[in-house]
Image (cartoon, rainbow, N blue to C red; front, side):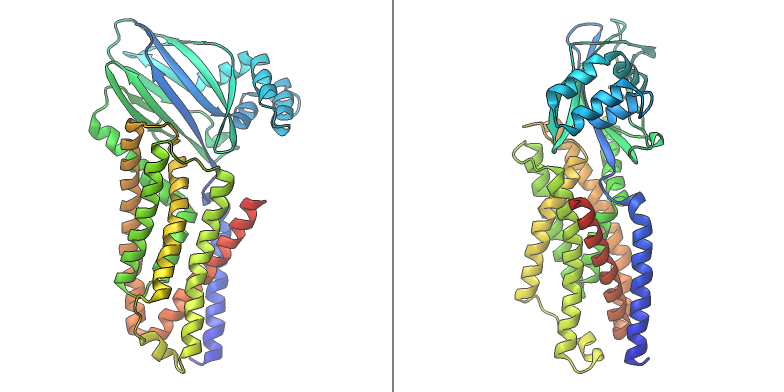
Length: 401
């Protein structure tokens, strides 16, 4: 194949890759989900106290009867746009019946199969979580006094409402002489306080695996690492560096020592994708400028020189930011919350399992292509890096704006 034909083929492949990624982005990009926080305790026999943290703007539009005429929508939207926390709480209090009715229809507690009766306990308050206003609502559920186990279910802010792709409800509880945490979503809407430790482990393992699989930006970051690694040693070092970095952020977030708004985290995650993928394109250009033949460049010895260590440093820094994105999916913001720390570590295991599976599936294929057809392998990884770079830059601009 002539150099001109190769360039044309590369351009076609890159264009197809970018088109596919752009078409998938609106449905799969990270950041279009919501998280509900629920803390359940039993202050007295026959009572379950549920403190719920609900994203304010979602609560307003979901509880309102119509987006244009409902008084809650008008008052709530005006307070939201004015960044007026007192006005937001007042809007919810003024239409408490509608808001509580919406929440209690979708969040429930049962005792031994019998529904507990909810009642609002106090007014609404507003707090900031990751730069987003959250409404705090306390509900007092009256349950049969002899109940030995409770079941909690949540279907708040489903994707069918059209406002978010889906919602995860992170529950921490101290009930029935047991304490723990659980993650609920559209596929797993309920749990029992008497679930086994194995069931709790699987819930958070599954949540971590699904979070990586459905977070296209994290997958593209990993793909950029794989495409830019010519040897097994490189990808192992890069993946290990990334893992260590986001694990550090996990622990810091779980201990309440770090809190960074999503308005910073999400754009930087997008930028990290473009930088890591663009780094590979720069290396390709560098090889071509120092080699007279692509075959020579394809077989050239690649050691972990200063550029390699710099790449690992960049991966580590971006890994810290990705860790903040992972931690926000679990709402880890309670200082010294060891129950949530355990859940988060299991969540991390799920992430690493999927990450390892992707590396095992993709890296050997690229390595085989590079070995048998060095030039073809170079064009393939270059096309992948081009598509990923473009997608990262598109997301970066979208998230900044």
